Image (cartoon, rainbow, N blue to C red; front, top):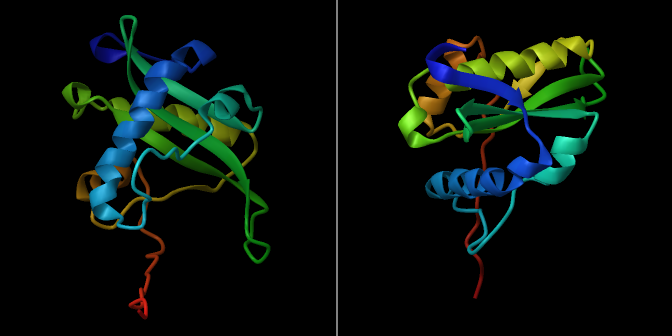
Length: 158
């Protein structure tokens, strides 16, 4: 891999750093999503994802240091779609000092290969509409904008 970066499957021993990555993702997303509960939350069951046959968690390493992550998870598609299952990508995180070096793209390529090896042809992910750097990064590796989810919030009556 370029620049001394190696992409590999995550192992349970990576869990402490991956849990820190998860909290960094949540910290970055809170300004874009006022519905995320206050206090400590978790998005993922990372131990389950690492050990599951229906998921693959990849990490990028610089020497012994884990510097980036991502996962692919096989999900059941909605009954009316032309595919029964798809690969869902998530948990994309790169340490700030390693951003802009194509590492996330290499993780995505590895995850795409895994999804395709499972016989699936549809790959999806979600990203906040305000997250222009992420949108650009995903478009750079071939993803297209597909659906915009909208929300309406009513004022609570007192």
